[in-house]
Image (cartoon, rainbow, N blue to C red; front, side, top):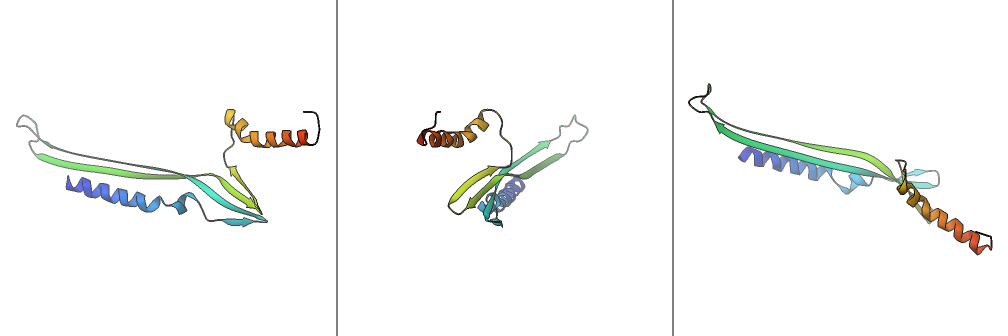
Length: 124
């Protein structure tokens, strides 16, 4: 059981060292007059197990044994970019939205256009 505890401690330390803020929010870079900051999605997983057993006198192998195993995984992928220009800031997703979420993403722009037309006295 001591090996299992030691292995889980090592996996936890590995995940702690890899899952940092710098991993999620990337280094900013310039693209013309725009400043871009990549935003990542991070998935972590780990598992472990152990056991022990004794053979019986009726079994072919009457020995004793213990065992433990474990694994850890780390997956990352881009979610989008925070883009700034002067006083403006916008999040640009890397995945296209569909359905209701796409409508919600477009809603601020639609409301803004509606308000501009109304303020200019145009028929809406």
